[in-house]
Length: 99
Image 1: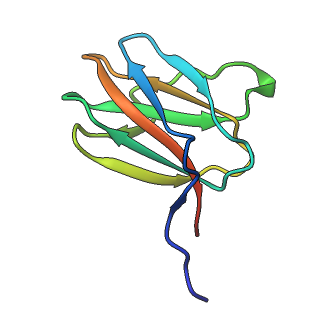
Image 2: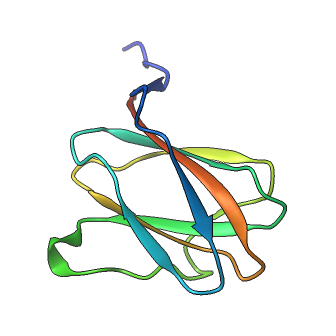
């Protein structure tokens, strides 16, 4: 089986400010993957979830993204993301497809 690399959903990018208190944003529930890029100077953490059960706050026990680094994660069925950074940073979040 050939794996498909991440293919972005152009126009879906969001710049999210991650601060000491967790904050949430909506993301496409139809997309299979999410690209999260930390463009700030401090580490951030995130989690994706289905918000039909309410907001799930991100903590420092969730997925870490060091400053200047990124991650592509599978998130089928999830329609929200929570982010946190104790020192503050910015995350660029874009939905897409891939395997």
